[in-house]
Every structure is written in C-alpha cells, then in structure tokens.
Amino acid sequence: MIKGLSITPPVLGRISIGKVVEKNGKRLPEKDDQFTITSQVQNRDGWVVHPLDTELRNQTANGKLRSIPVKLLFNDPDLNLRANYCLFDRQSGRPLCVGNGESCRRYTDTGMQSLPCPSPDECELAQGGLCKPYGRLNISIGDEDALGSFIFRTTGYNSIRTLAARLHYYQAVSGNLLACLPLELKLRGKSTTMSHRSAIFYVDLTVRDGKTIEQTIAEARQLDQQRKESGYDQTALDVAARVGFGNGAFEENAEEILEIVLEFFPVADGGTDIDDDTSQPIIGEVALVDDTNCATLPKSGKVKLSLIDKLNRQKLHPNNAI
Image (cartoon, rainbow, N blue to C red; front, side):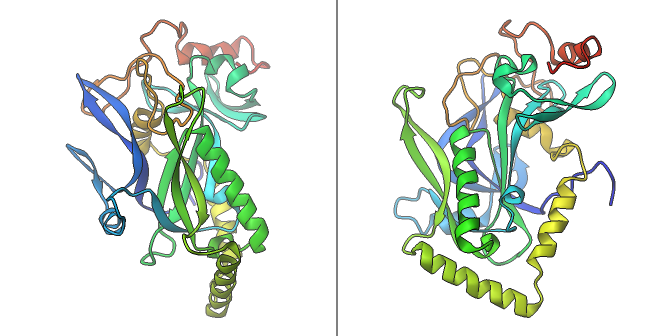
C-alpha cells in the first residue's frame, strides 16, 4: 500500500442538495430542496445526472427526490461518516488543517505537525469562517456493486449531528449490524432564528417508509446470517477500511479538492455554501480564475493575514495553536 495516500471506499457517484452555478463570471453555490444523484463525470452544465436519480425520481409523486433507499458499508459508524473540522486554502485548494476539537494535523513551514485543536470558535487561523465542520458519508444505493458507494458531503451542523447520532443509535439497537440495515436517506426541513424563520434543509437517516425499527432489525439479522453463510467477512472489511483511511494525512485527493472548495468552502458575499444548514453568511467572493476553476482568497478585507502567513507564524510560536 502506498504510504501517505488515504484509501477510501470506491465512489460511483455523488449525492448533493445543491450545485455550483456561474453568475456574472463567478462560480457560486446554489442550494436546493431535494437530492440530486450524479455520476463522477462533468460537462459544461455541471455534473452529469446518474441513471439512479431518474429511476428514483420517477417513483415520487411530485418528481422531487427527498428520500433515497440506502445501505451502509461498515458496522463502525465512524467509518461510514467521517466528520472533522477542515480548513482549505482557497487559492491552491490544498487542505491545510484537519482537527477534531482536541488535536489537529496541520501543514506548517516545517512540514506536517500535530497540534492542539481549540475548535473554530477559538482558533485564530479559523476566524472569518475559514474552518468548518466537514462530513463525508459513504452509502450504497441499489445492489449492483456491494462495495461501491455514493458520497454525500456536507458542512452543515444539523446534518452532521443528526447523521452521527442516527449511526451510533442504529449500531447500538441492532447489535452491531449497521451494514445490514435497510435504511433511507431523508431530507428534512426546519426553521430557526438563525435562518430568520425561513426553511433550511438537513439530511437524516431513518428506517424505510412503512417499516418499523423491529422489522428493520429482523431483516438485518437475516441478511447478516446469509452473509456469514456465504463467507462474507464484515469484521475484516471494517478493519481494512480503518487501515485505509489512516494511511494518509488527508482524505481528499488532488483531483477532488478544487471542486470541494468551490462547493463547500466558498467565500461569496452574503452567501452560504451548498449544505451549510445553519444559514450563516460568509464573506469574500469566489471567482473564475482559469479553466481549473481555482478559487481566489477572500477580498472583503476582514481576513487581514493570508493563510500561509498565519501558518508561518507557527515558526515563531511552535507550541501554540493558531
């Protein structure tokens, strides 16, 4: 195995609740009130819709895809949903710092370092909304590829918190049969004072419509028994996934980073990213720099030091988290 390269589940497509659109020469995130399942291929109009999107959408009454039947790959909740605080350099797209609120891995002028992570509210480097919670959920749709997955990325507190709770609860009540449960990814709406009473959307994970939790667990036990009889080793799969995730400092690769920054870590005047379900405004702007769609650094003036400048301050204060 190549060291330094995070080995992640094979991805067949993406699940999103919005898209990046071009407006006046800028690429800006635009939210939606439904899911869209796309392939990994892009054209001039954006991501190409996956055939499963059309298939599932045709089964809805109003044509809006707000629930998706899914299964999980792993019994360990933290392998299905990886969530941490992330900071990306908008100019290069490179991940600079990833932390969990206690410790972080950060690029500095002396290389990769492990440092304390005080969380975005207390971190100087994170001021101005530069660091966010960032979650990646891998799920299986359909039965064509048992180990292939679709990835849902989110920077929404509500989505991350709800998904994490559901995964741990389902693991507990099912007796560690999370990977065998037939579940449903569901889009929910709510209003808060932060959203000025307008609807915001977040993602939940529930049992499928028409089924109780007891029926769902019974189906999971039956599937688990069938897998064991066929030689399917779920425990070994979880171990292999854990080793693969831990093989690299950061999960994202160079091909994905710029698109991720544009969708989930933009700096657009008065706007929010695609899945920021808190509806908090962010500052600056995202511009079309060239054909690679690199994002510019904030221009609002509220971020006075560049990220690289702040990182270089580690040399002066190596024992302090920025």
